[in-house]
Structures are given as structure tokens and as C-alpha cells.
Amino acid sequence: MNENFLQRLVIKPLVKLLRQGITPEKLALSLALSATLAVIPAFGWSVWLCGLAGLAFGLNLPAMQAVNYFLYPAQIALLLPFFRLGEKLFRAPHLPLSVSQIVSMARANFWGAIKFLWNTTWHAVVVWALLAPFAAGLIYLVLLPVFRRAVNRQSPTPTPPATQPSVA
Image (cartoon, rainbow, N blue to C red; front, side, top):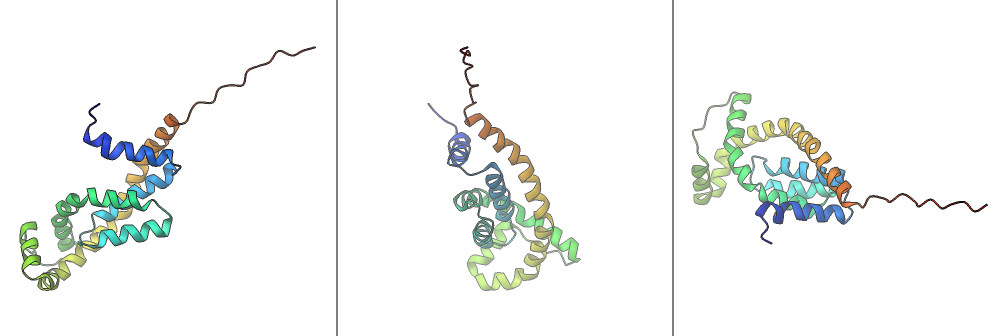
């Protein structure tokens, strides 16, 4: 049987976690928080934030780090939109940068890039922090019924007890 990528790397591991006893609520919260934390517009923070959130709320750390890993491209894709929203929110000057320029700056002079991008980055992090609770809540509300349905499909339906004729 040739399974597709999504089935093999996403759906089956999630169903396996549900079979192992993680509750739909905990799994939905694990994925919602990690998806939200994964896109913070500051590289290197998401791993630590996912770990801290997982420990603080007793969530599934492997699932959270897997989501964090898979959403790395989304973190890169959302970096400039968060930068631009931060510039607007703080009325900061526009930095005409591309992601490739940021990567080049970091490779050439890591600490210099951090110093240069410090204000832009913290402005973007503030915007992310304002939006993150709404994103996490929305993701949780979407995933929870999906996981509850998956658990209901996995659990065998109880058979009604057989009625025994009364002996009089």
C-alpha cells in the first residue's frame, strides 16, 4: 500500500498518540500552541518556547517539536509580514530587506545582523504576541472536534447487554 506523505507523517502519528491515551484536548492544545510558537519572528526562540510551554502545561513535547520543525518554512515566510506590521504599529522606518538579505547578513556577521535588526525584530515579536493568542485559540477550536471525532472512531462501540429471559 502506497501511503501519501500527509497520511504517513501527520495523520498516522496523531492517531497513534490518541490511541496511546493522550486526550484530544491535550493534543489539540499541544498542536495549537506549537503552531503558534513556531512562527515567532525571531529565529531560535521557537524550540525553547515550545519546550517551555510543553513542560508548563504538561503537553506532548515530541508532537510540539515535530510541528515546530514542520512549520519552519512558515516562520521564514511570515518573517517579513511581521516585520512590516511591526513597522506600522510602531511607526518605525521601513527597512527594505528580503529574507535572503537577512540570511546573508547573518552569515556574514551574525552579531552585527542582530544589532541591525534588533528594533525591527522586537517590533515584529510584539505584533506576533498580540496575534498569537487568537491564532492559538482558533487552531485549538478547529483541531479539538477533529481529534474528538478520531477518538470516537477508534473506540469500539459498546454492544448492548444481551437480555436474558427471566426464569420463573
